[in-house]
Image (cartoon, one colour):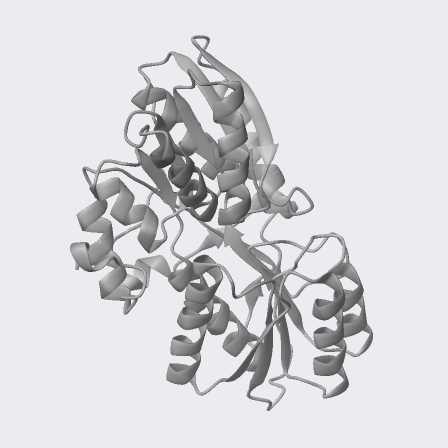
Length: 333
C-alpha cells in the first residue's frame, strides 16, 4: 500500500526553511517597504490550554530573544470576542506587527481589517483568517496531514476494517482541511469503512466523551483517526477504559509529547508530526523580517513527518536539536 510521506530534514535550519504555498494562488512576495524602526510584535494565541500552542509560544519566544524582537504573547482562551478585544488594544497602541492565530477563521477578519486600516502589518499562522489582507500566512499543509494519517491508519489495518474520525473545530480551515485530506484518502481503501465521524473541538476531554460514545455504538471498531493529538489522547483514555489500547489502531496529528510516548509504548500507531516549536521560530523570524522591511512570501507552508515506532526516537532527537525539550517525553530524551 502507498504511504504518503512528507519530509522534515532533521536539522533546525531545515525546519525553518519553508516553500511557497499555492493555497492562496501562488507565492506572491511582499517587499520594498522601508523598515519601520519598530522592534515589537503582539502574538494573539487562540488558546494556551493545548500543548501544541504552548510549544508554538515557546519557539516564538526563544527565536524572538535571539533576534532582538520584543514579543508580547496573549491568550484569547478560545474566545472570538477576547481575540478581537486583544487585537483592538494592540492596534490602538500601534504595535509593529500583529500576529494572529485565529480562534475561528471567519471571526479573525475583523481584526485583520482593523490592522489594515491602521497600516499595521498583520500576519497569521496555523489557522487562516477568511478575509482581510495579510502580509504573510504560515502554517502546515493540513490537507496533506489528513492524507498522511489516512494512509498510516490504512497500513496499520492492512487495508480493511471499521474506523472512526474525530474532527477538530470545524470553523477553522485547519480542521476542514485535515478532514478533507483524510476522507479523500481513506476512500481509496475499499476495505475500510468510516462508521462514525464527529467533532471534539481539538479538545482532549471532549474527545474522551466522543470516543466513549463511539465505542458504545461500534464495539467492533478497528481504528481511529483524531485530527490532533490532544483528541487522540482523549480517545486513548476511552480505549484504555475498555482494555483496547494497542488493539484499536490510533493515529493522530501534531506530535506532542504524550503522543510520542504513546507511539513508543505501542499504544498509538502514528502521528503526523508538525513541530509547533519550529512553527513558532518561523513566526518570529518572519515578524522580524517584516519589521526590517525585508521581502517575505505572502503564503508559506511547512510539511509534517509521519512518526511511527520505527522513527520516534529519531524525531525526538530532532526536537531536542531545535532546543525543544518540552515536547520530548523523558523516556525518549
